[in-house]
Image 1 (cartoon, rainbow, N blue to C red):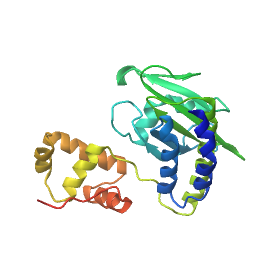
Image 2: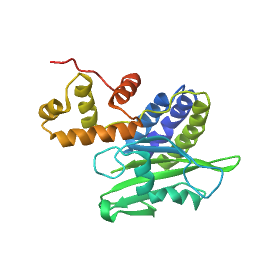
Image 3: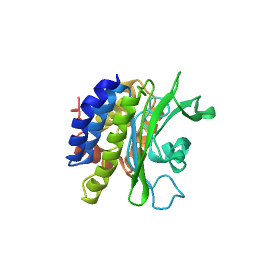
Length: 243
């Protein structure tokens, strides 16, 4: 599978360099990395001091812990110690995670194997040293040399382009919600009460309430109305008409 990666990476890099906003950048990366098994992405900057690995998370998407749900930046950073490895190396590396939440084990590996979540982390360097990193993850990934070389170019370009985009004031990528969370939001937006949504989806009212709480946290908003506004503006929410 490595051949197609090097054959198409040039076009992907060119498209990234011409990206006008984060939504376009994320779409390009997804389309390129998806065929090689990567469906989770993290893109962040690193502070000038080497004391911390992460300064700001620009993009976080995917099933990073194998439980089927998206994750917010705070949880991701707390549960992914492999991010700190960028402070100890000057080159990209493969990693693998195994075990459940209570016994998660992260390891830097030469080749991901077996069940679990696997990934490829690419540190990005600039004039001042480490400026950020990008991580690509998935349950079954192509870790061949050709694919890794292509992802190096994708990660480096995306990291530099995101700084240009944010400097220009363009919006940062909207965190993606799970299919279930979007379904809940569509019904809430149509004017249904949480008790009605629970009945329609075969859920308990407490489950619907928990979904709403996680949605607000992930989007960084204080109210359901603000969450609805963000999702409609980003185009992620297709509003259902009341029945």
